[in-house]
Length: 216
Image 1 (cartoon, rainbow, N blue to C red):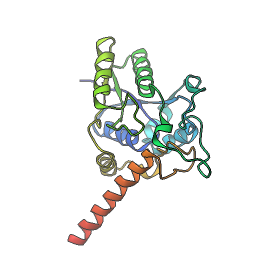
Image 2: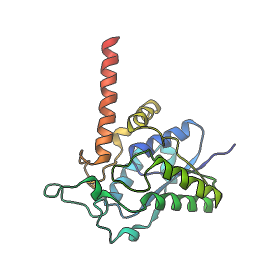
Image 3: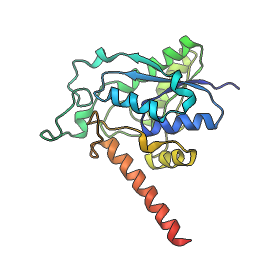
Image 4: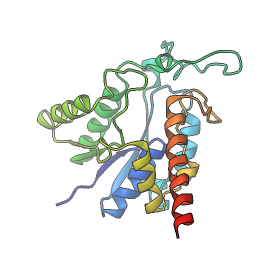
């Protein structure tokens, strides 16, 4: 059965791991990068070029819908001065972001004749968006499948960042070059929810490796 499709790709740890996971499972894909006005869009795209499997770099498709959130006050759109301004998780809230991304990807996939969209979303609700729960993702996938020809596949939906990072390392994905910061457009802040999850996951993996080496 042909399960080739479109991958929502951002240059982050999760989607990069998924890219390598798809190829490891003999699933071909078009990487789709969506600029929805995130202040880190340029850095994300530069990271994407660095971390994608070489065979996929020239296959990247870009869609720009940045005007949708141009008037948003979200710190994911309007970058804060981290030296002088405090950013809370709620400040990063962006209404309907995941609905937007999945709908665009599904529309693009159906237009290109693909039946699958692959997304590396994991179950997280740091910024309290209504569209970050397992229930939402399952419902959204059902709707897009029932009222179109596209299936939404999220292989990591029930995984933790730690579990995804381990998969990435096992598959040889360059997760050290990925970029996932929500608060800074250039250098990872180390304090936003995405950075904290990433750092905790990598720290746990490092501790496991040290423990395993000592036990040998």
